Length: 341
Image 1 (cartoon, one colour):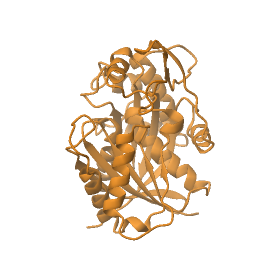
Image 2 (cartoon, helix red, strand yellow; image 1 turned 30 degrees about the vertical axis):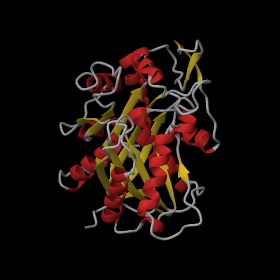
Image 3 (cartoon, one colour; image 1 turned 45 degrees about the horizontal axis):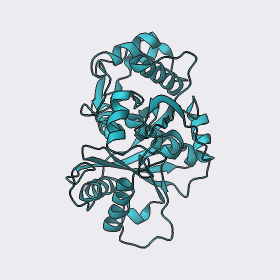
């Protein structure tokens, strides 16, 4: 059964390679990367490298998340009168609750702190979405419902996340999941914030989300079970069914993959199981190459990059598959189409 599409009206991003969506997307297009030394040392005695966001003050912890999120939201809501902000529901995407070293207060304090920083309030229908990298897909479903059933003209999705604390880094370092001089099968940790303004399709020049699918992967990265990509394949099939198209109708893929072989293998397996018509090219874009592992912000960054590529006409085509996965086994996919100007 096909679903009614929703449109991504505007975006905001704050990353290690740019403090706006335009700057970040331009840096990602140019494959610019900006990892720097952290205050932490790995077990081999080397400084752990990370994609750190440079702000005007050396904020840390939840305060820095608040500042980054407020900047991304303010950018995303440019053109929306401030007196109209309280009518917008805010769906705030944060780290999953099982993430090691997760900041305290993400479920009950971060939302209020963002409102205070922006000197505003958001609609009572607002919510916290605590599912890490798949959060944006869950938020898109909630936004669609708020628009199509709840009577809201616009919904704001935002995310803020950081892996740059020792309780988090130490767990990943012991598990040999960080990219270091001694380990090539890992990711560079990062921090970022992002925002998407969602509404009803109104015309040309918009990136439309036409279908969303979900599933669970039993053979997640820590399970030790053989990977067959059952979860991601099911999620992709669900998104394609909602969008009323086949995988070969799309032009490229964008993902939250940040460097680990497990997730690249999963993406390849899923494509082999779902793609039924040969394609000469089917690129896999991964913005984490420039911004690092950004946790809950990864999905928003992927959609922002897809939107920028479509509007500036450097994308391989108008049809996009976004695929997302978190360590707990949740899998999500979204089918996007750009309605050309």
